[in-house]
Amino acid sequence: MLLLKRRGIKHEVLNAKNHEREAEIIAKAGEKGSVTVATNMAGRGVDIVLGGDAPKNEDGSDMRGTSEWEKWEKKHKEVVESGGLFVIGTERHESRRIDNQLRGRSGRQGDPGESRFFVSLDDEIMRLFGGDKISGIMTRFNMPEDVPLEHPLVSKAIEQAQSKVEGFNFDIRKNLVEYDDVLNKQREIIYKRRRSVLEEKSLREEMLSKIREAITAVISVNSIEAEGDTNQRIADEFVTIIPFNDESKKQLVKQLSGQKTSEGKIEFLSGIAESIYKKREEDLGEEIMRQIDRFVMLSVIDTFWTDHLDAIDNLRQGIGLRGYGQKDPLVEYKNEAFGMFEKLIAAIDDDIAHKVFKIQVAQSPHEHTHEHEHAAGSEEIKEASVSEISSASVGPVSSGDLPSGNGKKKLGRNDPCWCGSGKKWKKCHYPEVSA
Image (cartoon, rainbow, N blue to C red; front, side, top):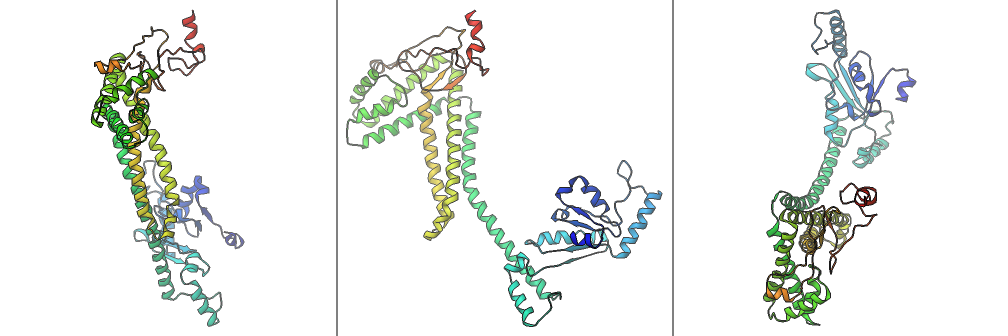
């Protein structure tokens, strides 16, 4: 552009910085004697009309038969007779497609036109592919630097270089897609699982199944270890699923001692869990219990999936180092990601079982608080003296550990108000209660 200014050649610049006048610049780019300096944005989709844009009516139709139309036809004819649009390229791009799009601006719809590209030996594509050889030939034959090389071999060498670059870029994109496909398949599984949680009316059976699986895992792991009291270890793990006080925990150990097989212990603890689950369902109501199930599943899935995405991203950043050990990074990435995903699914199911009994329902200060002590229906569960698991009241669901003992929880003046407004209780409904 500095060269054009020095020569006094009037020109327009078409780039992303001049977007307000883009339409006007393109409309005048086909006029006789006009010079337009453009970036790659003047490629595909830009139609330069010879002689400038044809005059049109407000409805978009041509103004044929008018004086303005005759003037435009005269300009159009002059440009056509002069040879049409001449496209000058100052470099050859890595992709032949971009060069062809720039060439395609001229000679459109039967109009005449011509294109010509200029390449320097210092350009990136020539420097990487054969520029030194051509420079050496010119030096050997003492050819002046201002003499252009127009031999077909040069154009062929440039096209071969472009073909190599296109193949290299294709391999990069293909490798990227293969890496993304691993995470995409995992994403489909998680989203399908999450969608089923949202669409299912009742998640009761699925929740009880996850609780039983968690209990089975606890008994299986602790039965293998030989050191210490197996029943005590099982009870310690079981209270992480369902909160018990110390006295109930001791009774639970005694009950487990009466079960000689692992299957018997699984059935015994599963019976306790199912009985307490049913009791909570009766106290809270079926609708509230379904909300709790859905809330627990969705929150656990979202939390673990977010952490998994971060872990996968960290794995992907460093997996390329496996290549130094003569291992294919992509194969290693697939194996590592598969193992991490299996652990993710197991961790989600286990955490759901550990949280469902620790959800407590917020209580409205306008309603009378009812406290219930949960006890199992069978004599064995009654002897276990199961402590209270939750207090029943209709209100928004929030996560948190259930208190042992009597389960009382007084709403403080500085606690969030029960109505969900986000304000403190003392600033919201407390004045109405105190009044």
